Length: 514
Ligand code: LRH
Image (tube, rainbow, N blue to C red; front, side, top):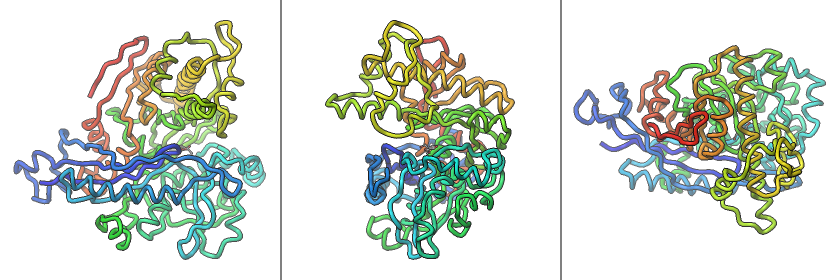
């Protein structure tokens, strides 16, 4: 019996990847334990706790912000080219690994950004990035139409300058575009290029700030505030549903099958939190740690109180009707942009060496506030962090070296995590959970994990690092019927598939766990 291979397209702000997930047939199905001879897939007997999904990287590539037509933008054509190369590589890899080729595809990326697509499917202009300053003042002018309290009550989404709502409010291209032009979020654009079908995936739709809280529908009032109509979006699709099938010409060109493209949690954070390896029920406490640190609780309903709004919390849609009640905290962006500045002035920086140096210098000297919007824009980050740093100990006036600066960033992050998790629990009226799950690339940062466990006084469970790709792939597996459609089956599969590391408060040592 052959394994089942699935492909995840996962785009982050600084890097992208096409990953292959390989799901082996259930041993019980292959040993005559009730399998129906369909390769062990699509079978209830596959409810087997020993099954694993192995992750293989088919293609990795860089992504970065570029100034185009006067705006910070994404090079979407280059990304599409990388995605195509990645899918061709994924097909070859899947076959080398003994599968019949890839059986389905799912796409996720960072949230909020969109492309304008004309009636014939042609893109109109650049995909402008959420860190561009075109939205300066936009939230304030939208607030004259619908006040901020009402915006939050209607959507549960925090007022972030980059929400699609505010981007659209200052985008005059849509008004001048041909009839039938639509705004497609980045993963939805890629799904359109793959299949020819236009959809708006629900989890990412919630990040626009225009989806009605608790409903699978747009808020007419907020569409109006952005100056758009619901026809300017494609129909909504829920994660787990099919978007369409890979176009035959593209399938031929890439050497892949005409396989389904499945809507996954196309907001990267939705896919990452789906793959949190929690055995516990609601609420699960998480940090999705990458360019941003998204910290909060997974809940069954949104927290729409004025107190939650005032504290800057948001309620994003998750897979399976969940809500992520969370706060956006600038995360590894502070470190990666600082490194970019040092490298521009000729230094060569190795991240692991830098983190080791940061662990060795004395702590508790400086603090910054990583939720401050002053860190949103790119450029001269090390200088900006040093300027913002408050002295809390020692006798230096500013962090002197990269190691001191990174130590300041990581200690500030850990304390912010402590404060924001306490705030989330208070606002959601939940006790502090026994453990905090850290997933995503930032979960590799052992110093930060230990500082976080120490600051919170609870266990930090680190991993998986590739949570977003795992959430994307495991949902495809469920949509194809290869794992059972019941709550918990995805997280069970993740737990069986990854190595985790546990950081206990007060300890410098960490233990490995499965
Ligand atoms: C992380 C992320 C986050 C959003 C931001 C725009 O990649 O999707 O959840 O707030 O990018």
